[in-house]
Length: 332
Image (cartoon, rainbow, N blue to C red; front, side):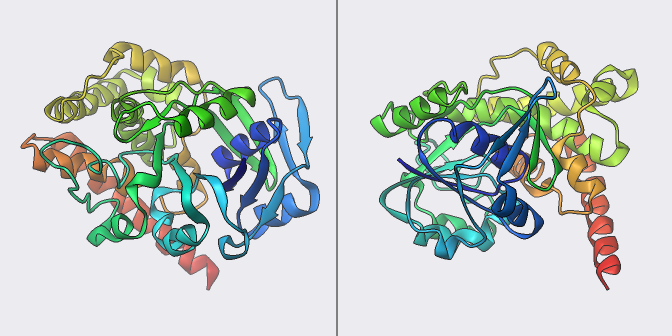
Protein backbone atom coordinates (compact mmCIF):
# COMPACT_ATOMS: atom_id res chain seq x y z
CA UNK A 1 0.00 0.00 0.00
CA UNK A 2 1.30 3.46 -0.95
CA UNK A 3 0.50 5.85 1.88
CA UNK A 4 0.95 9.60 2.13
CA UNK A 5 0.57 11.72 5.27
CA UNK A 6 -0.12 15.34 4.40
CA UNK A 7 1.01 17.48 7.31
CA UNK A 8 3.72 16.07 9.53
CA UNK A 9 3.12 18.11 12.66
CA UNK A 10 2.30 16.61 16.03
CA UNK A 11 -0.46 14.26 14.88
CA UNK A 12 0.81 13.54 11.37
CA UNK A 13 4.31 12.97 12.70
CA UNK A 14 3.05 10.58 15.36
CA UNK A 15 1.07 8.64 12.76
CA UNK A 16 4.11 8.54 10.46
CA UNK A 17 6.33 7.12 13.21
CA UNK A 18 3.88 4.30 13.88
CA UNK A 19 3.11 3.55 10.22
CA UNK A 20 6.83 3.36 9.42
CA UNK A 21 6.81 0.10 11.38
CA UNK A 22 4.00 -1.45 9.33
CA UNK A 23 5.76 -2.10 6.03
CA UNK A 24 3.75 0.36 3.96
CA UNK A 25 5.43 2.53 1.33
CA UNK A 26 5.25 5.80 3.24
CA UNK A 27 5.69 9.43 2.16
CA UNK A 28 5.16 12.49 4.35
CA UNK A 29 4.57 16.00 3.04
CA UNK A 30 5.40 19.13 5.00
CA UNK A 31 7.19 22.45 4.59
CA UNK A 32 9.77 24.67 6.20
CA UNK A 33 11.86 23.59 9.17
CA UNK A 34 9.83 20.43 9.72
CA UNK A 35 10.47 19.27 6.16
CA UNK A 36 14.17 20.12 6.41
CA UNK A 37 14.60 18.27 9.71
CA UNK A 38 12.88 15.12 8.43
CA UNK A 39 14.79 15.26 5.13
CA UNK A 40 18.14 15.54 6.91
CA UNK A 41 17.64 13.38 10.00
CA UNK A 42 14.38 11.48 9.72
CA UNK A 43 11.70 11.68 12.36
CA UNK A 44 12.35 11.18 16.07
CA UNK A 45 9.60 9.80 18.30
CA UNK A 46 9.86 10.46 22.03
CA UNK A 47 7.49 8.14 23.86
CA UNK A 48 5.69 8.60 27.17
CA UNK A 49 8.71 7.19 29.05
CA UNK A 50 11.15 9.58 27.40
CA UNK A 51 12.67 6.88 25.15
CA UNK A 52 13.71 8.12 21.70
CA UNK A 53 13.33 6.27 18.41
CA UNK A 54 14.72 7.65 15.16
CA UNK A 55 12.63 6.78 12.10
CA UNK A 56 14.39 6.99 8.75
CA UNK A 57 12.55 4.63 6.40
CA UNK A 58 10.15 7.24 5.02
CA UNK A 59 10.16 9.49 1.98
CA UNK A 60 9.63 13.19 2.55
CA UNK A 61 8.50 15.90 0.17
CA UNK A 62 7.74 19.60 0.48
CA UNK A 63 5.20 19.53 -2.35
CA UNK A 64 2.14 17.42 -3.07
CA UNK A 65 2.60 18.23 -6.75
CA UNK A 66 5.77 16.14 -6.86
CA UNK A 67 4.87 13.42 -4.38
CA UNK A 68 3.17 11.02 -6.82
CA UNK A 69 -0.17 9.32 -6.36
CA UNK A 70 -1.22 7.13 -3.45
CA UNK A 71 -3.65 4.44 -2.38
CA UNK A 72 -4.34 6.13 0.97
CA UNK A 73 -3.80 9.74 1.96
CA UNK A 74 -4.06 10.75 5.62
CA UNK A 75 -4.97 14.43 5.74
CA UNK A 76 -3.33 15.69 8.94
CA UNK A 77 -3.26 19.44 8.36
CA UNK A 78 -5.52 21.89 10.18
CA UNK A 79 -9.01 22.35 8.74
CA UNK A 80 -8.33 25.91 7.56
CA UNK A 81 -5.32 24.69 5.53
CA UNK A 82 -7.23 22.20 3.38
CA UNK A 83 -8.59 24.70 0.86
CA UNK A 84 -5.11 25.66 -0.35
CA UNK A 85 -4.28 21.97 -0.86
CA UNK A 86 -7.47 20.85 -2.59
CA UNK A 87 -6.18 21.04 -6.17
CA UNK A 88 -2.94 19.24 -5.33
CA UNK A 89 -4.79 16.58 -3.32
CA UNK A 90 -6.89 15.78 -6.37
CA UNK A 91 -3.71 15.32 -8.41
CA UNK A 92 -2.39 12.77 -5.87
CA UNK A 93 -5.50 10.60 -6.06
CA UNK A 94 -6.54 8.01 -8.62
CA UNK A 95 -10.02 6.54 -8.96
CA UNK A 96 -9.41 4.07 -6.13
CA UNK A 97 -7.57 6.39 -3.74
CA UNK A 98 -8.90 6.99 -0.25
CA UNK A 99 -8.64 10.28 1.65
CA UNK A 100 -8.71 9.79 5.45
CA UNK A 101 -9.58 13.03 7.26
CA UNK A 102 -8.17 13.64 10.75
CA UNK A 103 -9.22 17.22 11.50
CA UNK A 104 -10.63 18.45 14.80
CA UNK A 105 -14.20 19.68 14.86
CA UNK A 106 -17.07 19.04 12.45
CA UNK A 107 -15.67 18.36 8.95
CA UNK A 108 -16.78 20.01 5.72
CA UNK A 109 -18.17 16.70 4.42
CA UNK A 110 -20.46 16.12 7.43
CA UNK A 111 -23.74 16.22 5.46
CA UNK A 112 -22.40 14.36 2.42
CA UNK A 113 -23.61 10.74 2.09
CA UNK A 114 -25.70 11.60 5.13
CA UNK A 115 -29.11 10.25 4.07
CA UNK A 116 -30.84 12.78 6.30
CA UNK A 117 -32.92 15.93 5.80
CA UNK A 118 -29.80 18.07 5.28
CA UNK A 119 -28.15 15.81 2.68
CA UNK A 120 -25.35 17.73 0.87
CA UNK A 121 -25.88 20.86 2.98
CA UNK A 122 -22.69 22.94 2.85
CA UNK A 123 -21.16 23.96 6.19
CA UNK A 124 -19.90 27.45 5.41
CA UNK A 125 -17.62 27.57 8.47
CA UNK A 126 -15.41 24.80 7.09
CA UNK A 127 -16.31 24.93 3.38
CA UNK A 128 -16.97 28.53 2.32
CA UNK A 129 -18.97 28.55 -0.89
CA UNK A 130 -18.81 24.74 -1.11
CA UNK A 131 -15.30 24.85 -2.61
CA UNK A 132 -14.06 21.63 -0.96
CA UNK A 133 -17.30 19.84 -1.76
CA UNK A 134 -16.70 20.45 -5.47
CA UNK A 135 -12.98 19.66 -5.45
CA UNK A 136 -12.90 16.54 -3.23
CA UNK A 137 -15.33 13.73 -4.00
CA UNK A 138 -16.99 12.55 -0.79
CA UNK A 139 -17.04 8.97 -2.09
CA UNK A 140 -13.24 8.93 -1.75
CA UNK A 141 -13.39 10.01 1.89
CA UNK A 142 -13.19 7.97 5.08
CA UNK A 143 -13.73 9.77 8.37
CA UNK A 144 -11.32 9.25 11.24
CA UNK A 145 -11.11 10.62 14.78
CA UNK A 146 -7.62 11.14 16.16
CA UNK A 147 -7.52 10.80 19.95
CA UNK A 148 -3.76 10.78 20.72
CA UNK A 149 -2.15 13.81 22.32
CA UNK A 150 1.24 14.81 20.92
CA UNK A 151 3.46 17.85 20.47
CA UNK A 152 6.30 18.86 18.17
CA UNK A 153 9.09 19.23 20.73
CA UNK A 154 11.39 20.69 18.06
CA UNK A 155 11.53 20.32 14.26
CA UNK A 156 11.56 16.63 13.41
CA UNK A 157 10.91 15.51 17.01
CA UNK A 158 7.46 14.29 18.04
CA UNK A 159 6.60 13.90 21.72
CA UNK A 160 3.88 11.28 22.24
CA UNK A 161 1.95 12.24 25.36
CA UNK A 162 -0.83 9.65 25.41
CA UNK A 163 -3.32 7.69 23.32
CA UNK A 164 -3.16 5.41 20.27
CA UNK A 165 -6.80 5.36 19.16
CA UNK A 166 -7.90 6.23 15.62
CA UNK A 167 -11.50 5.01 15.09
CA UNK A 168 -12.65 5.33 11.49
CA UNK A 169 -15.61 4.67 9.25
CA UNK A 170 -17.27 5.15 5.88
CA UNK A 171 -19.47 8.22 5.58
CA UNK A 172 -22.34 5.94 4.56
CA UNK A 173 -21.85 3.74 7.63
CA UNK A 174 -21.30 0.61 5.59
CA UNK A 175 -18.55 -1.89 6.27
CA UNK A 176 -16.24 -1.94 3.25
CA UNK A 177 -13.06 -3.80 2.29
CA UNK A 178 -11.17 -0.52 1.90
CA UNK A 179 -11.94 0.79 5.39
CA UNK A 180 -11.09 -2.60 6.89
CA UNK A 181 -7.77 -2.64 5.01
CA UNK A 182 -6.81 0.76 6.41
CA UNK A 183 -7.89 -0.29 9.91
CA UNK A 184 -5.78 -3.46 9.63
CA UNK A 185 -2.79 -1.36 8.56
CA UNK A 186 -3.16 0.94 11.55
CA UNK A 187 -3.56 -2.00 13.93
CA UNK A 188 -0.49 -3.63 12.39
CA UNK A 189 1.42 -0.44 13.20
CA UNK A 190 0.51 -0.72 16.89
CA UNK A 191 -2.50 1.61 16.91
CA UNK A 192 -6.14 1.02 17.82
CA UNK A 193 -8.45 1.50 14.84
CA UNK A 194 -11.99 0.18 15.36
CA UNK A 195 -14.24 0.45 12.30
CA UNK A 196 -17.46 2.22 13.26
CA UNK A 197 -20.84 2.21 11.54
CA UNK A 198 -21.51 5.77 12.75
CA UNK A 199 -18.35 7.84 12.44
CA UNK A 200 -20.32 11.08 12.85
CA UNK A 201 -21.27 10.23 16.44
CA UNK A 202 -17.59 9.65 17.23
CA UNK A 203 -16.68 12.95 15.59
CA UNK A 204 -19.24 14.68 17.80
CA UNK A 205 -17.92 12.93 20.89
CA UNK A 206 -14.44 14.34 20.41
CA UNK A 207 -15.72 17.72 19.24
CA UNK A 208 -17.90 17.88 22.36
CA UNK A 209 -14.81 18.24 24.53
CA UNK A 210 -12.69 20.16 22.03
CA UNK A 211 -15.24 22.93 21.55
CA UNK A 212 -15.00 23.74 25.26
CA UNK A 213 -11.44 22.95 26.30
CA UNK A 214 -9.52 24.14 23.24
CA UNK A 215 -10.91 27.70 23.03
CA UNK A 216 -10.79 28.20 26.80
CA UNK A 217 -7.17 27.08 26.85
CA UNK A 218 -6.31 29.48 24.02
CA UNK A 219 -7.83 32.38 25.98
CA UNK A 220 -6.49 31.50 29.43
CA UNK A 221 -3.30 29.52 28.65
CA UNK A 222 -4.55 26.90 31.10
CA UNK A 223 -4.09 23.17 30.54
CA UNK A 224 -6.93 20.67 30.19
CA UNK A 225 -6.43 19.45 33.74
CA UNK A 226 -6.55 22.98 35.15
CA UNK A 227 -9.69 23.84 33.21
CA UNK A 228 -11.44 20.62 34.26
CA UNK A 229 -10.63 20.94 37.97
CA UNK A 230 -10.94 24.72 38.59
CA UNK A 231 -14.58 25.05 39.66
CA UNK A 232 -15.56 28.27 37.79
CA UNK A 233 -14.08 27.07 34.49
CA UNK A 234 -15.51 23.59 35.06
CA UNK A 235 -19.02 25.08 35.37
CA UNK A 236 -18.47 27.06 32.19
CA UNK A 237 -17.32 23.93 30.34
CA UNK A 238 -20.47 22.13 31.48
CA UNK A 239 -22.66 24.97 30.18
CA UNK A 240 -20.89 24.87 26.80
CA UNK A 241 -21.17 21.10 26.54
CA UNK A 242 -24.87 21.15 27.45
CA UNK A 243 -25.54 23.54 24.57
CA UNK A 244 -23.55 21.41 22.12
CA UNK A 245 -25.30 18.26 23.33
CA UNK A 246 -28.68 19.77 22.41
CA UNK A 247 -27.41 20.49 18.89
CA UNK A 248 -26.11 16.94 18.55
CA UNK A 249 -29.40 15.48 19.77
CA UNK A 250 -31.29 17.53 17.19
CA UNK A 251 -29.20 15.78 14.53
CA UNK A 252 -30.00 12.36 16.01
CA UNK A 253 -26.53 11.95 17.53
CA UNK A 254 -26.19 9.84 20.65
CA UNK A 255 -23.14 10.83 22.71
CA UNK A 256 -22.15 7.46 24.16
CA UNK A 257 -20.03 8.89 27.00
CA UNK A 258 -21.74 10.79 29.86
CA UNK A 259 -20.68 14.39 30.34
CA UNK A 260 -19.06 13.73 33.71
CA UNK A 261 -16.93 10.94 32.28
CA UNK A 262 -15.89 13.18 29.39
CA UNK A 263 -14.71 15.75 31.95
CA UNK A 264 -12.81 13.11 33.89
CA UNK A 265 -11.10 11.99 30.70
CA UNK A 266 -9.97 15.55 29.99
CA UNK A 267 -8.61 15.93 33.51
CA UNK A 268 -6.61 12.70 33.17
CA UNK A 269 -4.73 14.08 30.16
CA UNK A 270 -2.91 16.26 32.70
CA UNK A 271 -0.88 19.36 31.99
CA UNK A 272 -1.12 19.09 28.22
CA UNK A 273 -1.44 22.20 26.09
CA UNK A 274 -4.30 21.72 23.65
CA UNK A 275 -3.53 22.07 19.94
CA UNK A 276 -5.33 25.41 19.89
CA UNK A 277 -3.22 26.72 22.76
CA UNK A 278 -0.07 25.52 20.98
CA UNK A 279 -1.17 27.48 17.91
CA UNK A 280 -2.04 30.56 19.96
CA UNK A 281 1.31 30.59 21.74
CA UNK A 282 3.17 30.40 18.42
CA UNK A 283 0.86 32.94 16.71
CA UNK A 284 -0.42 30.43 14.18
CA UNK A 285 -4.04 30.50 12.95
CA UNK A 286 -6.33 28.69 15.38
CA UNK A 287 -9.02 26.16 14.41
CA UNK A 288 -11.90 28.36 15.56
CA UNK A 289 -13.94 27.91 12.40
CA UNK A 290 -13.66 24.12 12.50
CA UNK A 291 -14.18 23.50 16.20
CA UNK A 292 -16.76 26.14 17.16
CA UNK A 293 -18.02 27.56 13.87
CA UNK A 294 -19.89 24.50 12.54
CA UNK A 295 -21.65 23.78 15.84
CA UNK A 296 -22.98 27.36 15.98
CA UNK A 297 -23.96 27.19 12.30
CA UNK A 298 -25.74 23.85 12.74
CA UNK A 299 -27.44 25.17 15.90
CA UNK A 300 -29.11 27.79 13.72
CA UNK A 301 -30.07 25.08 11.22
CA UNK A 302 -31.80 22.96 13.89
CA UNK A 303 -33.10 25.98 15.85
CA UNK A 304 -31.09 25.54 19.05
CA UNK A 305 -30.07 28.48 21.24
CA UNK A 306 -26.31 28.48 22.00
CA UNK A 307 -25.40 31.80 23.72
CA UNK A 308 -22.37 30.43 25.60
CA UNK A 309 -20.89 28.90 22.45
CA UNK A 310 -21.54 32.07 20.47
CA UNK A 311 -19.82 34.32 23.03
CA UNK A 312 -16.83 31.98 23.27
CA UNK A 313 -16.56 31.98 19.48
CA UNK A 314 -16.55 35.80 19.44
CA UNK A 315 -13.78 36.01 22.06
CA UNK A 316 -11.63 33.37 20.39
CA UNK A 317 -12.07 35.02 17.00
CA UNK A 318 -10.78 38.25 18.54
CA UNK A 319 -7.81 36.43 20.09
CA UNK A 320 -7.07 34.79 16.72
CA UNK A 321 -7.23 38.14 14.91
CA UNK A 322 -4.89 39.73 17.45
CA UNK A 323 -2.44 36.82 17.17
CA UNK A 324 -2.32 37.04 13.39
CA UNK A 325 -1.82 40.80 13.52
CA UNK A 326 1.07 40.34 15.95
CA UNK A 327 2.59 37.67 13.72
CA UNK A 328 2.41 40.02 10.72
CA UNK A 329 4.03 42.84 12.69
CA UNK A 330 6.88 40.56 13.77
CA UNK A 331 7.53 39.46 10.19
CA UNK A 332 7.84 43.05 8.90
